[in-house]
Image (cartoon, rainbow, N blue to C red; front, side, top):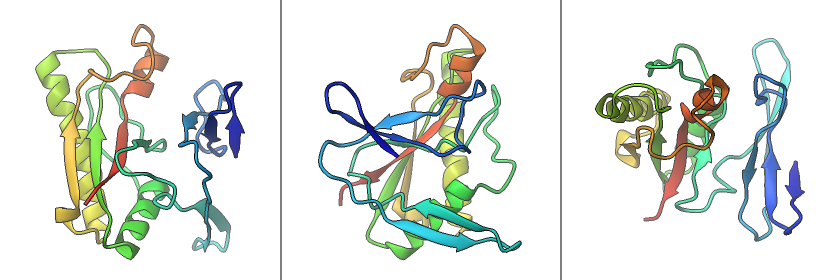
Length: 174
C-alpha cells in the first residue's frame, strides 16, 4: 500500500509479516515520481499462493531498501533460516543480470566501535553469501559495513536497537 503524508510525500507500507513487536507496520519513503509495482504470484509446496511485489522494479540506483525480514540478535551475523524476502531478491537478480547491488550492514550502538564495524560488514557478507548460494554471481554484489554510524531508531531502548541491527541493499549504477 502506498500512503501520502501531509506534504504529499509517498510512503510504502509493508504487509502483515513486517510488523514491529508492538504490531505497528513499518513504512519507507518512496521517490516522488509515479511507481508502477508489479506483482508476482507464487505457490509454495503446500499449494498456498503468495503474492509479492517485485523488489527491483521500484528501486532507483543509490536509494536504500531495508530488508525487513532479516532480524539479527545483538552481536550476531547469522542468517539461521530460509528467508522469503532474500529468495525473492535472488530470483529477481538472477532474472536481471544487468543489475548490480550494494549491501549495507548496520549495528546498534552496544559494544566496541571496531567490533560493530566488523560485525556490520559480516552481516552484509552473510546476505551476500545467501544470494550467491541462490545463483547470483558474486561479482554483482558489493558489501559495506557502517557499524552504528547510521541509526534509524533511538538506541536508548532495546526496540530501537533491534531496528538498527539491519541490512539494506541499493542498486549500483553501472
